[in-house]
Image (cartoon, rainbow, N blue to C red):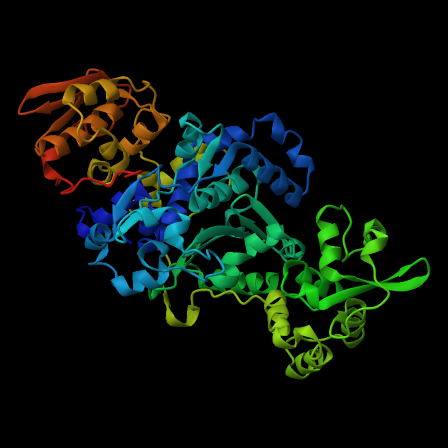
Length: 591
């Protein structure tokens, strides 16, 4: 595939979206998810992690222990962030006016949380808009959630209220994918990124599989342990369909009828993930299910000898003790857990409508129940038909707990059209080596081309997509400076720290990044000022020039503002008259 030398509207939107990297843009252009991974692989930041003392001795560990080590590093250095303040607000009509030519709005509403999709009510009993504070705004107002590069994630330390880096779920998934390869040594072919309408996570093809969910790491055993943490990690795959699967070889999308992922790789992944989410029903698995099923616990009692005589205690009380104990009902420490329960909690008998957990355990142990066999399921239901479980669909819930069916994009309805060249980063042991290898593929591989836009590398990309994103999609700075006198706007922009969050002479931050993190190179701050003054004056005709170590903002040949700059983009004169004004002021938070 030879990429078009002249950008049509669709390609301009695609490449500018690689700069913005908002959730809605990733949904529309699924190549962007892996483009962000590649951008992080080209960044020197993660490569420097390998020199951190935290990773000393990593080579002596097995792969799973290395991943655990990486997980703790990320937990210590990044928090999850999905507030409204970071990237501001936009509106559904504004975004639909961009996307309407590319995607049916009704399909978008079914699959993207920002355009009407609310997922399973298991997520938010009070509704998504209330959960995120959007109920204060008109119903057409939506958050402009943007996915962050590793540099933007690191820069959160400069925001009030943060002591570490931060990022949203797509950012964390892309960060993990790059770090798993760079630091841990996991081959990129074994790493998959999964996006649902409300979440993103990673699946690593290691042994039975490892699922990485924000800052949680789950093996198959952990997936089924019934703990509160695993319950939270299970929500997306239990309740959501997977919108995008992204991989080194390409992607598949639940809406589009073309897929670029290797079909053999996708089939193997589908089988591996399905096996990860399925387990046999054992006595221990019954206990794990009941641990996370608060509705079913009161229907069971535990039989246990107290001073040589059988006594009974409610199973909900047993799990209550377990929460504050290092012992578990479902492993070899059961006796120690039961010894911790106060004697007065036990009774000499129990309500006949309640089931004795030990007896149901024994039945499962003796009958080797196959949950895929209707006869086995019917027999199990008969065992629990009497008692208070009769009105609870406990067996259906137990089956769903043991057999999660991932709702992946349907391979039978797509045409697999792989990229004409494959990405091969084997042997690349530095950010520079990765960049050089990927640079060879530019113009032949769409995801690679977009990766350089996500990298914000204006020595290898056209300025137009970057400027379109900067001038049209920076609502936070525009709202913060709206209505101020020009001299005050200039003063506030001038007072920002003279430091770019991006390394190198040609990588530039967007205006909202400069404003959010209170710092920027001279050229970045000049662009921020240009964005605000164009809107305030309602005059689009301005020019930014880079020459002799200075960035200059001009209007009708007159210099408005100039700052020293260390940045050297490929294009040194940007005519901003080519870009439309926003047409409306962005909504302010807190109003």
